[in-house]
Image 1 (tube, rainbow, N blue to C red):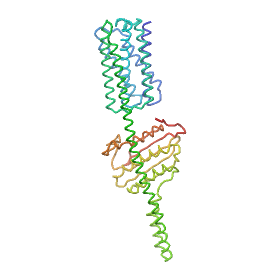
Image 2: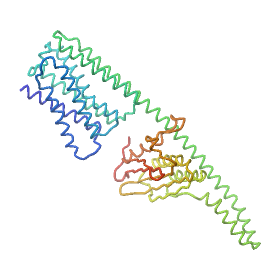
Image 3: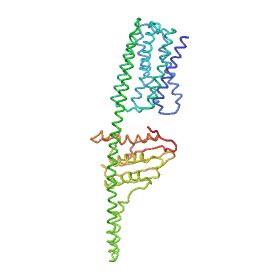
Length: 444
């Protein structure tokens, strides 16, 4: 009977670890998820039974327990790296969390049962005893509740701590692990009433306070980041307003001067100077009318303003720009689309300024349930080879570098993707957005 209880506890614990990893990180590939989970479960169960259902020779306990910890870390790390998604620090966290969580819970439950029942350590550890059964039940239940809490917190929040902040948290978890391990070993060798329960509670409180502190730091980081992005967005809007005002003044000036141009043309015609009149009108059309009227008309004034503003910049910078738009873009919110277009076109303009013959090509279209945006700009040399992460090279780094972040954020909202690649002296940005009619994007 005791063997059945022990094996059942191992099965339950392995199921909880598999569920925690899958639900916290999610699969990178949705194919054969059941097979992957089942294989991981069987490996965990084999490892658990091999190390817990054993009778090792005395003196080998420390070595065996160390080997057990290493095996568990290798199994979890291998599984999350091969099959699961998430960021690097999330994978590291989920690799060590089960070990730390199980040890801490076992420590607290062990100390509580010793304090309340007065049982000796050997009686609690001994298979088949009532104290042992209670310890198993309460420890597995507590671990289940802890896993559910972590998963729910993961679903509600976006982790944005810096590498330094995550290093602090992981270091504290490791220190807690070592303290708990040593405390548990000392408690196992002591037969009198343990004094380790207050220490266990203090360790737990310490970790809770650490979580609250880092969570507050995370919120402050988000607020600061949003403040910087808002400031940059406001500056960009002010710049666009100024440039739109300049274009408006050019149009007003053209309208004002048009009377003079027409009067001059009429005088030339009345004098019979036909060839001079023709050349004069062609010059006006080329130098004045074409330059002011050049642009796109998508039917959305916001998107038109963004694209035409960048077209005007290209004309001033002597950058050849071509636009091919085969989409009304009504499926995508015009604010999100304007954010994408303004950032990707600004990057393209900046990227081809040092090219002898700068060119930009903008293509927008629909394919099945997706809207795609492809921007190509000429480059003098490879960008990805020297700057694969596309970090800003401007001096004021805190005030820049949010363009790529904004593009990825909008693409994620629409369950889309953003890819950067190069070919034949061209830097290509390719964005795909799932249209809301067939599947609305996430709102977080």
